[in-house]
Image 1 (cartoon, one colour):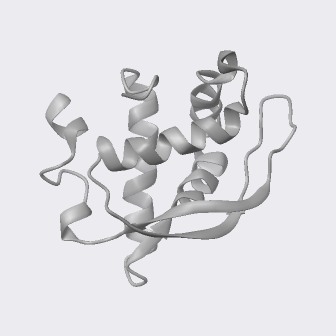
Image 2 (cartoon, one colour):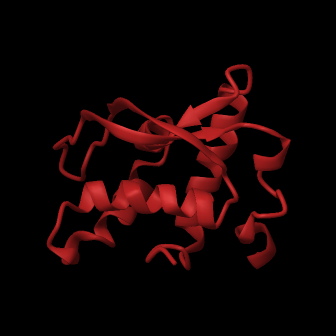
Length: 128
C-alpha cells in the first residue's frame, strides 16, 4: 500500500487527474504516467508535493519514488491497466520553485470501459 493511500485529499487529486486523463486522451486510447504527473503539477501541485514529501525520509530520490508509487497506486488501487512503457517528458515544480523536469521511462495506461473510475478493480471506490 502506498504511504499516501490513506489521505483522502491526495487520493482524490489522483482520481481527479485520472478522470481528466480519460477525458483528454479517450480518442488516443491511452495516457502515460507523465501525462498525469504533468496535470497534477499544473492543477494539483500542492497535493503532488505532499505525495513527494511522504518519500523524503527514505534517503533516495523522493520525486522518482513518488512517481513510481503513483503508478503502483494506479494499478493496485484504481484498476488501471498498464499496456506498455515509453519515455516521455515530466514536469514537476517543487515547493520553493525548483523544478525536476526531465525525460524518463514511464508506464502507459489503457483507457477503456474496464479502466474507467468505478471499475470492478477500483478499490478506492469501494473504500469510500
